[in-house]
Amino acid sequence: MSDLVLVIGNKAYSSWSLRPWLALKQAGIPFEEVVIPLRQPETKAEILAHSPAGKVPVLRHGELVLWESLAICEYVADLFPDAGLLPDDREARAVCRAVSSEMHAGFPDLRRNMPMDLKRSLPGRGHVPAALADAQRVQQLWRDARALYGAGGPFLFGRFSIADAMFAPVCTRFDTYGVELDPVSRAYVEVVLGLPAMRAWIEDARAEPWTIAHDVP
Image 1 (cartoon, one colour):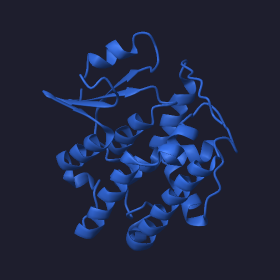
Image 2 (image 1 turned 90 degrees about the vertical axis):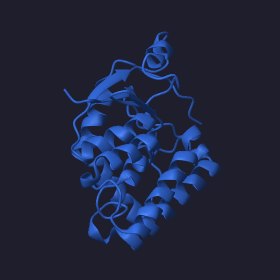
Image 3 (image 1 turned 135 degrees about the vertical axis):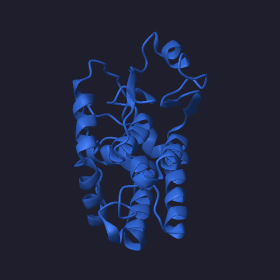
């Protein structure tokens, strides 16, 4: 059994949980997975049993309890440097961290109007101007990263990095809600959604018994 334990929410809806889970899977790092379904009567107590932050995801590594998706991804990148979850080049590494942080802290209208939902297809829903403006900024980030740093592979910085893990839920949102994408962004979404780990996550999500109703404009 691995000494890494990742506590996540149900896969159909927990975008924050997907990020470190995908980073670990893509890096080939073994870990134990604990799923806590969200918005159930016992959810809060079950999460608090793992972390006083009261939110998922949570990474447990020995005595260490680490919360927040980006912090977990950064820790895993430090713990397993040979996995290559950060670019080798200093400039590319700095930009990778910048775009990952922007995803972590930004795009509230995209999140609010197009919540991650892997159980439904909702083309055209959630296309309010503010959400579409967020979507345009995301695509600009993707185009710039691919143009400047993506020569070594199909991901934002060539090989898979924590930036790709951070943007993976956005790829599902663009697919679920039928957001119009430029050719570079469309190709990138197809690459991410085609990853075996992503296909496995989506398959698990669709098989889950829990359903959360989202109010989507």
